[in-house]
Each structure stands twice: as C-alpha cells, then as structure tokens.
Amino acid sequence: MNRTFVPMLFAGAVLACGSAPVSAQDGADPASGRYVLEKSDEGLVRLDTLTGEMTVCEQKSGQVVCKLPADERRAVNEHIADLEARIDALEDRVAALETGPGKGSEKNALPSDEELDEAFNMMEKFIYHFFDVFKDLDERKERPPEPKPLDPDGDDIPRKT
Figure (tube, rainbow, N blue to C red):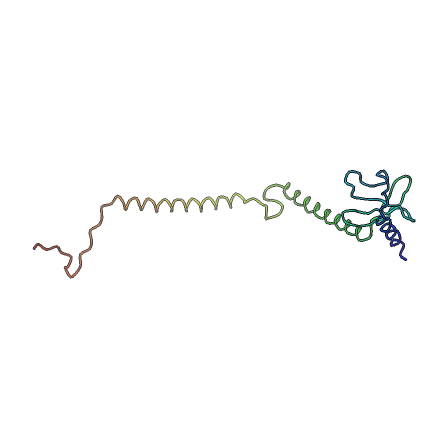
C-alpha cells in the first residue's frame, strides 16, 4: 500500500472509533478547534475539521512538523508568484507616478501649457458665442414688432366700408 495512505487510513479509523485527540500542545489549535492530531504508526496525522484534509506530521525535537501535500504546495507557490507579480506592478506604477507630471506613462501625463491654452481658447470662443445668442434674443424682445409685408395683390390693404 501507499506509505501516505496507511497513516490516513489508520487516522480515519481512529477518528471513527472516537478516540481522544492529542493535547493542544502537540499542535492542535485550541482557540478554534479546527485541527485534530491523531497518532499513527508512522507519526501523527493532522485532520482539518473544516475541510476534511489530512496531513502527515512528525515529532522532531519536541515540535510537530507537518508537510504540505504536493498540490497544496503548488497552490501556495502559485499564490506567492501572483502576489510578487502584483507587487512588481505596483512598484512600477509608483515609480511612474513619482517621476512627475508629463513624465512616465502617457495615460497619466498632465497636459502641456500649449494644450491648456488651446483648450481655454476654445472654451472662451464657445462662451462668447453662447452669450451672443442670448444678447440677440434680448434685442429682439426690445425692438418694436416689424410691420407685416404687403401682399402684392393688395388684399392686405385695409378698406373703409
């Protein structure tokens, strides 16, 4: 049989029989009770009571040392690599921001003085044109109404009866 399977099988059988767990000083988490340690022929087996995962552990120099399974170790290494990549990206971004305005990435660059002048000139033209429209409307209100043009046929001429 597989060497890691035997301790797990033994630990499962011991847990099913209701044996008492090893004391808290042997590695169980006394605060949450999440992990339970059981003795086996080859050392200790740690059971995660939340996930049901079992890990083979050994007692060395009065301390319990548990080894991560290969798939769990791979997941931890992938997570560490992801975090390192995110740190590198953040450091690059901070460096780009610290170089000052108009430098670094073009996306974060501030506009130049010429670009600002051009934008203000366009806005000034827009505002003056906008106010001219209102001036024209006010002038139309103040003017007397223009007489209606006469009809060439003479139908618009008022007649006395």
